[in-house]
Amino acid sequence: MSRVFMPRRPGDWTERSWRRVAFFAHANEVGHLSTVLMQKRAEEYGIEWPESGSDNPGILPWLSFPVVPPAHSGAEPVWCDFYVVMENASVFLKRALKRDDDTAYRWVEAGALLALSEAQADGVPLTIGWGAYTKVATNHGVRFLERHPDLQDQLSTTHGDAGPVGLLRQAIRLAGVAPGFRVSVLGAYGAIGAVISRALVALEAGQITLIGREDKEGEIKNRERLERLATSVFGLVPKHQATEVLIHQDNTTACKDHRSQLVIVATSGAPMLPDHVLPGTLILDLTTPAACQPGHNWQDRLVLTTGCGEFSQVVVPRNFGDIAGVNILDVGAGGDRIIWGCKGETITRSAFGWHGHLVGQAFPLGEVDWCDRHCALVGLGPQPPVSFDVPVSHREVREFVARNRDN
Image 1 (spheres, helix red, strand yellow):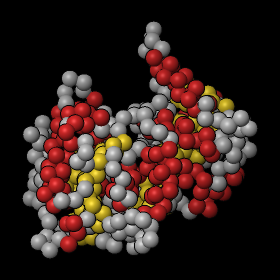
Image 2 (cartoon, helix red, strand yellow):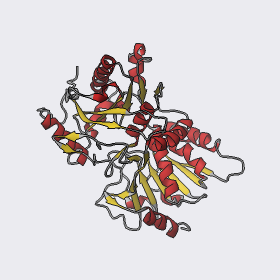
Image 3 (tube, rainbow, N blue to C red):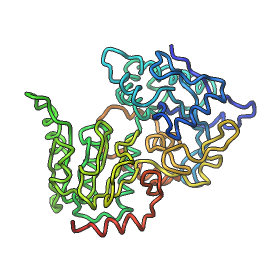
Image 4 (cartoon, rainbow, N blue to C red):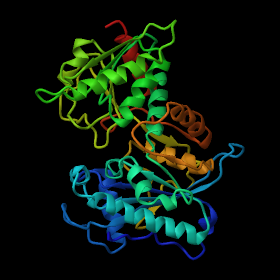
């Protein structure tokens, strides 16, 4: 059984009766701001941060904070707890991918069950969110429900993928991308990539290139997955709309071959490098850890972190809570009061009293529309543009897009 450390509740914790969110993830890589803050929390709790590769790293209550939606929004206040497995992302992923080893799943399962036990003791509804690579460990939440069918009516769960897609779509609109644009989706047949690919139709893309992994010699299964997705995407195109849907299996050449003006990175399975795209390309990176890394020559290309959301100040009155007496504004998602989109979606569903289970890699496009509407109501909008931790104004982004519109 995993070591699970519960949040320390004050005796006069007035928010005990609020709807509650328990969100699960893991550490980022060494030195990342979020990982540094997690290690500070562990130190505050008197917990020694384990060596990477530990068989039982433990689950740490990282952030605890209230979310108070605007009056007349139809949403209610929510108390949010963010739990993390004390293991770096790359190591956690390797463990989660092992087919004959459910250790990574059991780590997060133990935390979820304890969070549910506490919520039930307090008599409040609980919404669980599976973040980052805990999606892999739980098979996007399916495994948890399969192993605990008796709990399905006692809580709600979501993998949160609709949140980042909704925020991404809003970011594209804010960037001034005009109808008819050429776009490539890297990691197109993944859980989030497939939804992005379908969601782009509503933005009137002129060309959507779906990029997936190359097949092993003698196999065609990856190509067949891309072909099925392409058929699904094309089936959403209205008769009056001219949208071409293409497939490609070489991420190093696809964007250049099809002269993509916008590239959406929905997988960190392979690094994204500047020479994979043409100069003048806008690149939106949804991945954590990021697939696009500084240190390369990104000149004449604009890389933006996206898929996260920004809370208005009044909605998170205590920001993201305190760690060792220091109030936390920036958790490493891109700036002040910015949180990962899957976490934002989980909070939004709880605040609106949604009850159900959004699990599995395939989910209705309508869930993205739901997030578009309800995240805005709860006070969560797309994050301000940021490129490798450097803020960029919306005006600068629109000017970049306009300069390269005819390329």
